[in-house]
Image 1 (cartoon, rainbow, N blue to C red):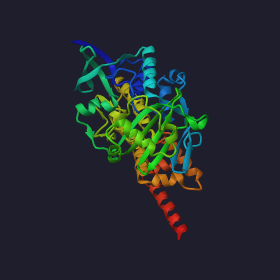
Image 2: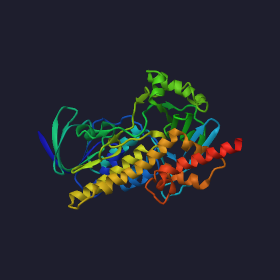
Image 3: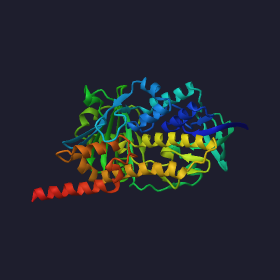
Image 4: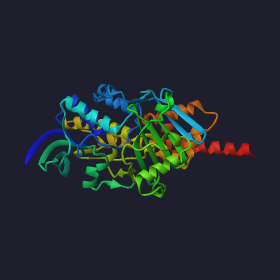
Amino acid sequence: MNVEQVDILIIGAGPSGSVAAGYLQKQGARVKVVEKSQFPRIVVGESLIPRVMDHFDEAGLFDALDAQGFEKKFGARFIRGKEVCIFDFSDKFSEGWDWTWQIPRADFDQEMANELMRKGVDLSFGTEVTDVQFDGAKSITTVCDSQGVETKIEANFLIDCSGYGRVLPRMLNLDQPSRLSPHSAIFSHVNDVNRPLGQEGSLISFDILETQVWLWVIPFSNGNTSVGIVGPTSFIESLGEDTTTALNRAIQLSDYYVKRFGNVPFVFEPRKLSNYSTAVSKMYGPGYALTGNSSEFLDPVFSSGVCFATESGILAAKLALRQIEGETVDWQSEFEDYMKDGIAVFTTYIQEWYTGNLQELFYHQPENPEVKRSICAILAGYVWDKNNPFVLKHDRVVKNLAHLIRMSKQEKSI
């Protein structure tokens, strides 16, 4: 059996693995990436948020991605009946990027992989991890390629960016239940032949059909648009077993979008993601770190998935490089505690979205500009900025403000 030796092995070539590999390659580390899938592949996570732009830039991937002409995203719109709330990323509490991209992930991930290989990164597609053994901080990983050829890879550190594959969580029994209620989603793309001109045609929107049920609409620069329905698993299952029928039924529930998408065929058979929220008991060990969806996935409502993937991916790469160069790294405080601070903020906002409390803040009139700017910074991914009171006091501020709004409404109705 062939044996390869590298400084750092990365499992997965999605956004998390790509920014980790890009950063490490820039630093001169011997890095190898193994990816079970063959690219291009269809996955969710098509709406980015501005914080990720820092990571693509630092990993040396921004220029190649920007050259692809992906649809630029300057904010987001939330529709509830006749009520509309629009967030503008240029008007937020925290400093940082004021735009990002809306992307067909098949094209986006392929371009990241192409750029990594152009830069000399060793990336193997169709390569599945079948076994991992640890000897202190060193790992011996057995992989099998599409031809059935096995190889052992000896690494001084292993970063698991395997996403829904969750390689190490499965092998090391690290999975644990999510704190979020079980939700599911069905999505596909359409050739958006009825797309309006101007901002209306390019703006990402979330159409709230019920408090816990919403439709996403993500237009791409290639003329296609991603359409998906999200809700409690019981609701999604009530739409029917056939995913095409189910997504068509969901579109019919949207007064705002039924004319645009009601009779438009899907580009591919709609995909279903059931009970997608996940968590782990720990995010690191002596010779490994878990990043992105391999550690925790929350909910697509605020597009946090790719942000946590790239934030954790590039941070794990930096810490792993320091460790193999002989530094003592405090993985608990520098990695897990840091990541969980941001995850806790987004978890609160997702939970309060589904209770309806956050929706009270979104649609309250007249708008409070400072409240909106603070929430906008969170939606842009700046969830580690504790100067923002809506980050620092996330566990109570939304609930308290929603209570005050409801009390005010009751007083006015008396």
